[in-house]
Image 1: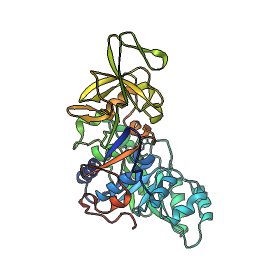
Image 2 (image 1 turned 90 degrees about the vertical axis):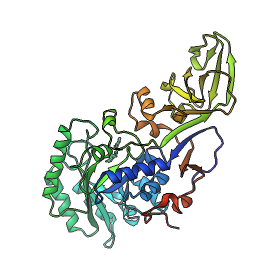
Image 3 (image 1 turned 180 degrees about the horizontal axis):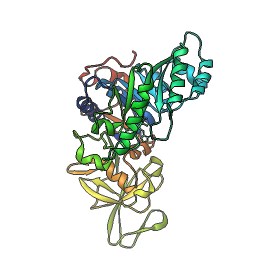
Image 4 (image 1 turned 120 degrees about the vertical axis):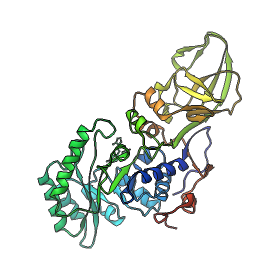
Amino acid sequence: METQTQFFRDTWAEINLDHLYENVMNIRTHIPGDVKVFAVVKANAYGHGDVQTALTALSAGAHGLAVAFLDEAISLRKAGITAPIHVLGATRPKDVRIASELDISLTTFHREWLVEAEKQLSEGDRLNLHIKCDTGMGRIGVRTTEELKGIEKYIQAHSQFELEGIFTHFATADELNDDYLDQQLARFEHMLDQLDSLPAYIHSSNSAATLRKTNTLFNAVRVGIAMYGLTPSPEMKPELPFPLKEVFSLHSRLIHTKELSAGEKVSYGATYETVEAEWIGTIPIGYADGWLRKLQGQDVIVNEKRVPIVGRVCMDQCMIRLPEFLEIGTHVTLIGKQGEEAITMDEIAGKLDTINYEVPCMISTRVPRIYIRNGEPSEVSNKLLSSGIHRQEENNHQINE
Ligand code: PMH
């Protein structure tokens, strides 16, 4: 896969792979050495870029990758990534053959699904499966031990299937009260007790559980948000076992500046009116980039100072109130640091009444991603990434040359 190396607009996201690497290393140091890390790179790695994130996480010692859909796994394989990949969500039984061909592990939670999937596979095919247990998330998964045993028996009786893993997902791991998590854990442990033999991977922890708990780790964890340097919930902030470094930042440049006299209007609806003579700058980012209209009034950073977005955010542009005349081309930081000033993902999430997970996911693919490694922006191609990044210790999951 060729990564975009050139772009022609003054708005971009910087993905700091050095921070990602450090976060994964810190997570690995925090957990016992025999617990494997699956880097969750679904949804284009929460908007960060799946291939670059995957390669960096693997170079930092992640054992494998987890995605939501088969399509995401196929695209990682097509990029040459040979590490274990597990599809966490449901896959249609009619699509299992390509998963088997590409050695992609799927999730199962219905005996009937296995019956249908088997029809797609030939004698010599092999499909790795993880059984999903619904212990209280109420999303997908087996809920009873009867269902679980039915699936285990069916897998045992059919050589095309290999039971590679069993897992569950916590609904409240990011809350400090553990009552519900403990109930889910007890249900999961009860389900594990029913199996004739345990598969290779047993996993339940997302980032929050990985950071907060020791009794949920089993022998693998699925880490997403913490790898991206974001805290799973505001209440976990004071308890973090090590600092997380934000990976994603968002930038633009002034494309126009002008002085308006008092009483002039700005943007659709003419809702903003200058109170005095004001310098107004325009930046080329708008709601089609995921910089939503609700961000009217949000600060950005220019010359290390906060200034507000004024008037309505348009599809491709928005306006900011400048402290003085500033040159076209002046750097504007929308998420990230300039000098002492910082706008965090959590600040933007707060302004949008949402969680930090949603913010990088919503910055659309129209915004080019620039990858930083070893402190330098790199016009990165995956070949480059595979060839020597980060003093790799465990570099056995890299791209096929
Ligand atoms: N495992 C599963 C099954 C998940 O759905 C997710 C995240 C993770 C692991 C990683 O969680 P983390 O990012 O908190 O570490 N899933 C979602 C979701 O469906 N909505 O928000 C996050």
